[in-house]
Image (cartoon, rainbow, N blue to C red; front, side, top):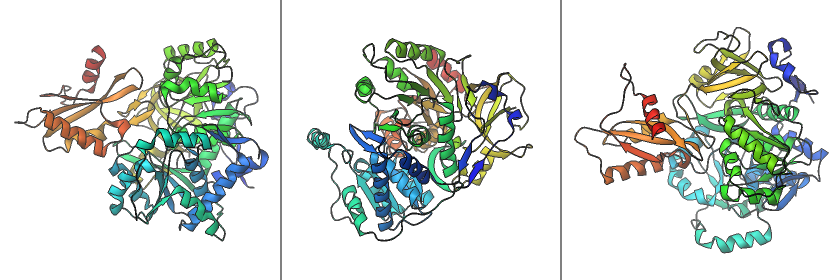
Length: 575
C-alpha cells in the first residue's frame, strides 16, 4: 500500500531533542481510509476487545462484523459514495459503528451534538444536504419540528439501551419506563434501529468503496471568528495521522490496554483522541455515553481503565471521588486537553493519582478541532512553566508569529501559535473566507493553521500557551461563542444591546453570563426575562446557555466607546 511521508526537515524543529528515546520524528502514513485502518488492526488482534459498553465487551472481529452490517443497511437505505450522513448521538456503540460504516461505503459522517437547538440541527443538516439522520429517541421531537425545512428522507432512531447486556437492558426498561419516548405512529420516515439492522439481510451487492487518505471523512463543528458554527472538514489522513502520532508519543498505547472514552464522539477530542487513536493501537474503548461526576469513581473501579483522557473538569471530578489506596493502580497514563490545566490542579491530580496507587502523572496537551484535536503533548514530569503544553507531535510543525502577520516571533516572545502538518483540516465547509483566514500559505511554502491562540516557544522548543485571541468562553472543554448568544438575545424586540462574558464556575471552569440593556421605555420584568430565556433555549445549545441574565441601564465602555469586557470580568472576579 502506498504510504505518504511528511516533514523531512528536522532543522526546523528544535523540540526534537526533547523526544524520548525511540520516538521517531517522521512517520509514514498509509493512503487509506479510517475504516481500512481499523480493519488492518482487527486482522492483527481479532480476539482483543475493541470496546466495552456497561459490561458488554465486543472483540475487534465482532466489531468489524457490526460495522459491515451497518454498511449494508446504509446501502439498503440509499446511501451512496460521497453522500453525507448526519449522526446526532452520544458515545455509544451505534454511533461508533455508524461512523466507520459510513466511511466504509465511501460516504461522510456529519457529527452533530444531540443537545443542539432545533435551528442548529437544521443548519447542520442543510449545510450538508443530508438525506439520512441517525439519532437517539430523545432528539426525535426536535428533528420532526424542523424536518420540513430539510431534505431528510429517513430518520434512524436508536434507544440508549439498545446495546446494553440483557440484564442491564431489562433493568433500564424498568427504571426508565416513565422517561420512554413515544415514537410517532404511521410515520414511514422514522425507522427504529432494530428494523434498520434487520434490513442488512435484504441487501445484495457491493458495499465497500475505496477512499484515499486525502478524501473527506468527517465533518465536526466548532465556531469561527464570527461565533457561528463552522463545519470543520477532516480527511482520512487527518484522523489516521493523529492516531499514529499519538501512538508514537505515548508509551502506554499498547494492544490490550484500555481507555475510558468519556468524551463525546461529536467532538474532535472524543472521536479522534479517545476513540480512533486507541482503536488503531489495538486498545479497548470503555464507552460512556454520559459522564456522571458522582459515579466517576465507581466507573473506574468497575472497568479498571489503563488510560484516562479528558478535560480539566473531569480531573476536578476525580479529586472528589472516595477511592481506596490502590483503586487507581490500573491507571498508567493520564492525558488532559480541551482547556488550560493550571499548575495547582496538576499538582493536586498527580498527588491524588499517587495516593491511590497510580504511577502516572497528568500530561497536558494542546490542540483544536481544526488540527484534529491534538498536536502537542508534555512528557511525564516536564510541566516546566505555567501554560506548558509540551512539544509537537512527529511531522507537526509549530511556529509563533507576530500577531496579524506571517513574521516569525523571537524565542520567548509572545505571538500567535501557527501549526502545519498532516492533521491540519481540509477547510471549513462551504466557507472559503473563513478557510482562507485560518489556512494560509507562508513564504516557506507550507500551509499554516492560524490558531487564534497566543503563546511562545522556549529555547528548547517547548510550547507555552498564554491566552486566546478570540473571545471564546471554555466551559467543561466546550467552546462557547459570546457573539452568537448576543445575536440571539438582541433579536428580542425589547432588547437594545447585550454583552456575554465568561464568569468563573467552581466545576466547569467558566459559564456564560449575559448583560442586557433594554430599549428606552422598557423596564425589566418577569415576562421579558422569561421570553429571553425561552428564546435562548430554542436557539442555543444547552451547554452554551447563559447561567445568569443581568439587566442594566448601560454597560461600561472603553475610551473609544467599545464595551469594556475586562471591566465586566473584573466585577465578577471581585464578587
